[in-house]
Every structure is written in structure tokens, then in C-alpha cells.
Length: 332
Ligand code: UDP
Image (cartoon, rainbow, N blue to C red):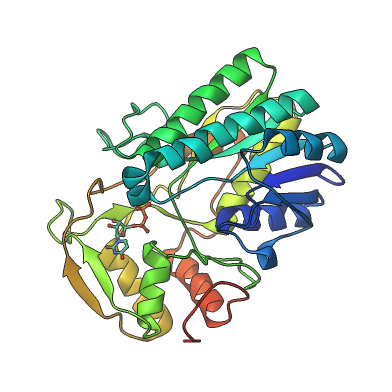
């Protein structure tokens, strides 16, 4: 990785910023390309170039001038509910944006890419744990955009000489273990930060459904530490540089936690209670989702270093007590 030049598209956002920092620590030279529409300049590692992922001409210039060895692509819209209300904006940014990036990469002859995909492409699970061969049936336009992009990427791998890894994330959570970076979505919709904000006394949390067919009646998800996700990106990139054509890999711990288990972990870590209200199910939420992540272990040697939910929550809590960016009402 030493001295390799990597363009991190969407590197000012939650997962992108953690990956950029981890790659820099591994010796890479980082440039972040981001329009800062949802990301933060304070989260950027290396040089920041402001730009839109749909701006093919600008991307081509940046890629040609920077003589990059690879691109990591995180720039996307990610709100499932918003994607149902405004699907076109999602196809535009997520699908057309990725096509613009790929065309610019081909023009600049940079053909190594790691892409942020999602377990949302599987839809309602037919079998658990979910492996990569599970059929694709995304429920939301958001999930559909990720599937469409994966199909475009398959064609680029087969016909355009690209090496591409797609990483299908389960639920990213936590923060940089040293507190330098964290999750600061606005609006925040994710369970771990919302439960922590409730512990801080800033809000109450709604439990979306108590009548699921799970042991405690709440949904089960696979919470993977964001620093472990970042490590998966590093390993994927190394494999591509070593000559592999790449493929899609699930990235999850393989263990599911229910909403009530997450809240209990938040209460243990913070020593405070989480004020909660029952609320109706959120449309499109399957009862349980957790990964079979054997392929990435076998192919890349990826092992989650922070598989314990409490550690993930602890790092997210550390961040929330001293956030370096983001809009927060007041310190917990
Ligand atoms: N959830 C909840 N209350 C909230 C936010 C989330 O009960 O305020 C539940 C949600 O229904 C899901 C789980 O927590 O079962 C994780 O949701 P999140 O939005 O964090 O991630 P997703 O699984 O939708 O990607």
C-alpha cells in the first residue's frame, strides 16, 4: 500500500472517511472527492477535491491529473424511506453517478475499484445467514440502485478490463477506536447513534415493531464495526492489486443482535437508561438479517477485530461525547 495513490469518492462520509484514514495509516496517499452534501470537511483525510459524482468531466480531469492506482467509491444516497418517495434522485446519484465515475476511470485508464454495496440487494431473506448466492429481490429503490450498480460492475469486470470488489455491508456501526471519526448523519436514522442520543437524554427512541417472529419480538441485524469494514476495503484493494479480478463479498460479523439487545448494550455502556416508545413496523424491514461472511474470510483473510457489540457501542459513545463535526444539540 506504501505510496499507492487512492481516490476516495465520497470520502467525507461515515464509512468513506474511516476507510480513507485506515488506508492512509497503511501508507496510501489519499485524495478525497466529495461534494460535502452530506459529508464533512473535518472528516477528510488527505487532499479534498470538491465535486459531484455525476460530473464525469471533472472526475476525468481529477483522475488523469492524480495518476491514481485505484478508486474507492462511497458516494451515494442512502435513506431507504427517501428512496421510496424520490426514486429518481436515487437512480441519478447512485446509478448514473457510478456510470459517470466508471466512464471517467476508463478514460483515465484507472481500472481498479472497490464499491460500497449493501445487503439491501437481497431483500426479504429466504435463508439465513445470507450468503452471496442468495437471490436478489431488493425491496426499496435504494436496494435496487445497489443491485443495478453491481450488474454494471459485473459487465465492466468482464468486458472493460476492470478489477472490482463490491462489498455488501450489513449494518455499519461504531466509530474510529481513537475517537477521530464517527457517525454524524443529518438526519440520523440508524439505531446505534439514535439509542446513544436517547441515553444522552436528547431524545426518546421508537421501537419499530415489537411483534416480529424473533425471540424478543424486535428485528435482528448484523452490526459490523466501521473500522472492521474499513479493513475489509484495504484487504479487497490489496487483492485487486495482487491481480485478482474481484467479486462481491458480504461484510458482516455473522451474528445478529435484536433492537432490544442493542438498547441493552447502550444502557450497559453508558450507564444510563434509554427512553423508548413502541411504534409500528417500518415498511420493508425484514425480521432478521445477518451475514454468512465465510467467503471474505477465506478469500481475503478478513476477520472482524471488534465482533463484540458492546465494543462497537463503546466506540460510538466515545465519539458522541466529543464529536469533532456534525450537528448535535449538546454534549451528553
Ligand atoms: N430501528 C428502530 N428504531 C429506530 C431506528 C431503527 O427500532 O429509531 C430498528 C429498525 O427497524 C431495524 C434496526 O433498528 O430493525 C436497524 O435499523 P437501522 O436504520 O439502523 O439500519 P437498517 O437495518 O435499516 O439498515
